[in-house]
Image (tube, rainbow, N blue to C red; front, top):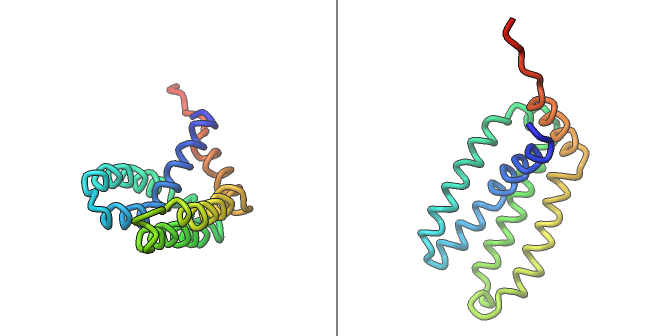
Length: 135
């Protein structure tokens, strides 16, 4: 598999699972159930991809802890944005000052930290194995 394609697959898998609880709460609180169903379908695909690579994530010490911290951070900020009294009027301010910084912190934790770089290296090594040719 292409290196860029592997990066996109890893990014999709981690980011969709990281944001799901907060986005689900936001969509349910705004009564947008049909969008929640579509997003849930995407999360099921992301969950399957996560399950395929779970041994890689588990083998790197500290990566799953960073994944759960990122999930709580991003989803928590989305839930706070959803329940603030400002959410009915101008949620852009709350979104800008709560969600965006937590997203940047999570991006660092999941893509730029030492455990994340080890996961990327193991991920690329696992998916770029040469296929055995028939003899």
